[in-house]
Length: 365
Image 1 (cartoon, helix red, strand yellow):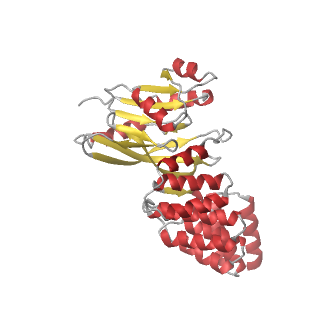
Image 2: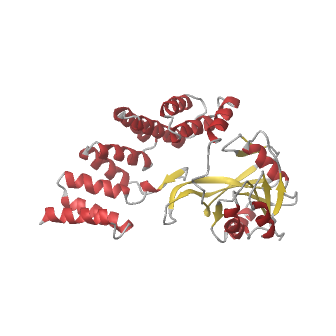
Image 3: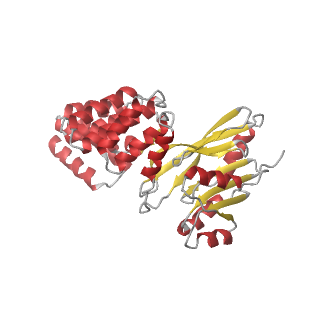
C-alpha cells in the first residue's frame, strides 16, 4: 500500500507568537509549507528553525485568494493530501491517522475534499462556543481559491469529486481578538461588487456590517441577500434572518426583532438557535408564558443536525436557565427547581444559579 504524502500549507504575517504551538500541531504532516506575506517580527526565522519551508511573497493589492493560490503553488506536485490551515489554528492530536483512514476508503476517486469540524470560537474553559463545518483539505491538483476574503477553494480540474465527511477531525481556532479586521469590510464590499449575485458573499457582507456596528446597512444588505436566487441552504437563510433580528434589537426595535426571529424559527424549526434568540427577547420583555413555551420546545430538540453551524448557547445551561426563570414567575416551582438542577449540571457551583435554587426552595417551604 502506497504511503500517502501529507502537506500542510499556510499564509502568515507577523504571527510569531503562534508559531511554536502551530508547528507542534502540524508535526504529523510530512512537510509544512508557509508563505509569508511580509512579517516584520521573528515569524519567518522561527518557522524555519522549527522545520517549515518558508517562501516570502509580496501581494499588492492584498487579496486572500491570491495569497492562498500562491501558497498552494509552493506545495510539491507529488503531495497526495493538502491541508490548508492558519497559524492561529490547531488540530486535535491524531488528525493524520483519521485523515488517512478516510482518504483510503475513497481511493477510486480522482478528487477528494474533506469536511471536518471547526471550532471557530472557544470559551475560556476551552470548550466550543461556535462550531461549523470546514473544508480546506483536498487533493493536490485542479483546485483554485476564489474571493478576496472568506476565500473558498473550488475544483476546476476534470474528474469526479468525492466529499469525505469526517466530523471526528477537529480544528480549533485560537485567534488574537485584538488583531484588526479593518480590511474585512472593504474586501467583502469588493467581493460583492465582483459577484453581485453571489449568495455567500452577500450574506457575509451583511454579517460584517452587523458586527462592526452598522445595523442599518446590515439590515439592508441581509434583506437584499434573502431576495437573491442563490441564498444557499435554509440554515443560511435562517441565520441571516436572525442577524436581521439582532440588528433591529440593537437599534431598540424589539417588535421588528421578534418578527425576524420568528421568521428564523419558521425556517429552522429543527434547530435550537432560533428558540434561543426568541428566548433572549422574551426574557428581556419578561414575557414568561412565551419564554416557557420557547424553552420547552427547544429542549425537545436533541440533535444538533448537520453541523452547518452550532452555537454553544443552544446546548449549554442557557435554555434551562431561561426555563427556570419562566417557571418561577409562573409559580411552577417544582419545574423551576428541576431546570435549575439541569443548569447546575453544566456549571456546578455557579453562584447565580445557586441563588436561584435558594430562592425557589424558599417558595416551596
